[in-house]
Amino acid sequence: MASFMIKVASEGLIAPAHRLADSGPTSGYAVIYEVTNCPEGTTVDQVVAAFKTITPPTDRYEIDFTELAAKAG
Image (tube, rainbow, N blue to C red; front, side, top):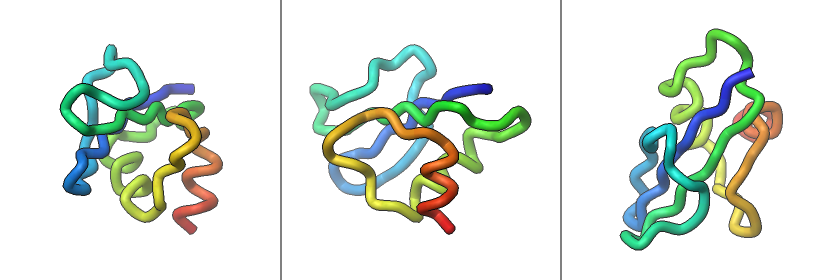
């Protein structure tokens, strides 16, 4: 299973983050989320597209892919 780092900018832009980024708020008013347990063959573009369909959690910075996929419908 893979994991991807997703960056949510303060103006709403959602994009891939550097794979070595730490999850949580950044000094530039963005938030880095780690999407864990992504199935083999899942691309970062698929994760970003699914992430765009949800409201990111405010109480944590890690989200399981199955939870993301369920919320995305």
